[in-house]
Image (cartoon, rainbow, N blue to C red; front, side, top):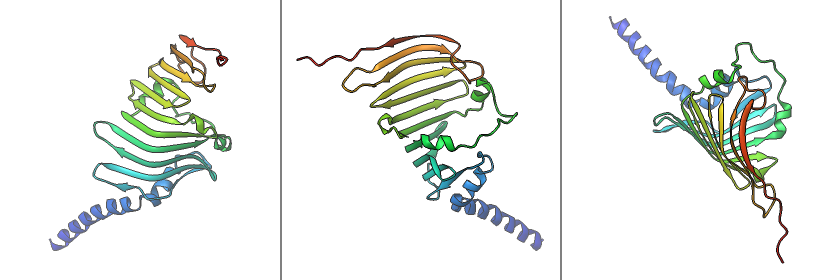
Length: 222
């Protein structure tokens, strides 16, 4: 009987130590594990190890690299679960120059193809990013908020140069606000409307209507 008790205690201790060890070494094994599913030539790098708090998981610094080019750089991310998954990110920097370095790969036959298939995979999630920086166009930076469920997806982007607010339900896309400040000291170009996206999201909307406002530049009054 003593041998059984010792074995049970050893098993219990192992069950406690394994999760603790994994949590303490997140920065070592998470990038390696993620690399199994990432495209060839890309990887995840953690400058600092993630840490668990009373509220959730904090990731101080994360980079998604294409070879040595930083395609995405995330700082101060926190993942919690109040009533659904909530991801708060302080800063996200995207470098468009790295897109050209992505390796060409063939789509897996098992990968989702239709819009409905992609939407069915979405978790109930909120994503808030305080500052999205698009390199080499820092003037288009802004604040991004996304709300997702498999049924409906909502997005809002607020910056000095561009503002967007839209909702996607199935194939029906509603754009309630799109404003682009293309010219300095001039009113922005605005657009709103409703569109129907194709079943396979690889082209332009198949139908819809929109209302656009375009004001021509005005000469300053004397």
